[in-house]
Length: 239
Image (cartoon, rainbow, N blue to C red; front, side, top):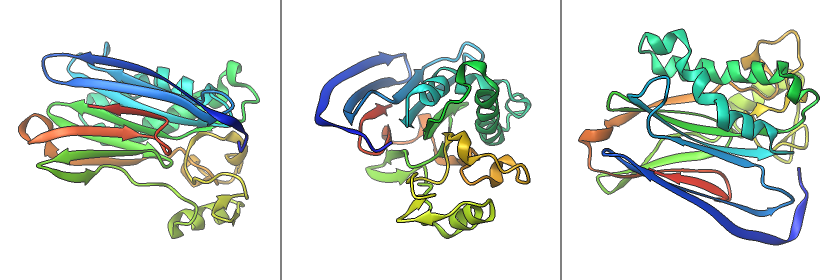
């Protein structure tokens, strides 16, 4: 996880899309890493729910497979939740994170996969923005000229995170879980999710997401942009 290149790869891959309601741009760069480990998603209209939009950034570590899988499939896990059908979108997001983690663990193509990924996603539905994340990728909005923070970092130095980690049999050294991982929640990282006496949300590393309902109405606010980014700005989406 700590390998880096002698010189960064600074070539950027950028994309742009829009509809009558919004404009979306994304860009990604490999940077110092041995290979590109990040993924992102921007869907202006979900095929499963054309009235909803979904955006996400996934910062992989130890490999790209978990980030890529999440980038392709997490939105599908969200919309198929019973809570989504009931209009309880925050709960649907939270459960979708756990469900995709379980699906990846049981996926034969990911057998013995050791990589992991942060995830920061935004669901726009019925003029309301919902955000969910694990790890230290971030989302912010600029509303009425002021920054509105839409996510929190999951770090092992946090008292509540540290308590869960140690209760599950892990430890923290130099602000890293088991001396290695610099974040306390992630998708994947299945070596740190093997305590059979603990629920998924109680593991050393958990995919149990923080979820947030924005205070502003998307189409009724003086909203300038929403910025979704991973640590180090290797990949980002601007809405």
